[in-house]
Length: 170
Image 1 (cartoon, rainbow, N blue to C red):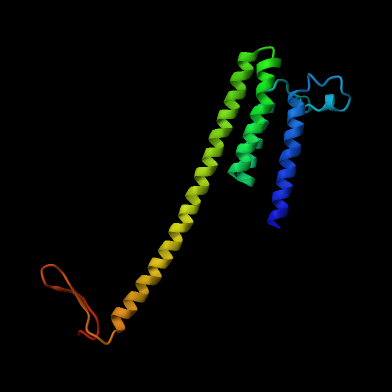
Image 2: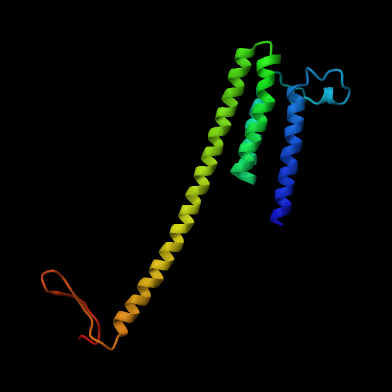
């Protein structure tokens, strides 16, 4: 079942990425009948490439969260390769477009880092819970051995006073 969700997420992200990239370059695709109509900003009634960059950020975060850090980084690289040529070579205002694209890439890169830190923290937390359970079990076993031993066992401090003793010692 998990494998089906993984395949679904990969297909969903890939299709959304392709549609988003077509939308990002829709000005250049005006001559192609079906593709020219694919524009997310016109669909939402908005203008500019800022919305598309924001959707790239969301797509990268979703890819990193749902499929793992490696897939998130791969989506980040693909998004950079999709956004930067438009910002550098096609935009009427390259400095603003480059700034916006780099900001989107920085935000999404930081988001992937936060996802990775969260996952590591969660794994450490789970590992610590396992260690706590093992320690508690070990302590209970030791206490049972100490209490029920037929030999006299005691522990004394540096001053020679007995700190604890078992039943056989009593």
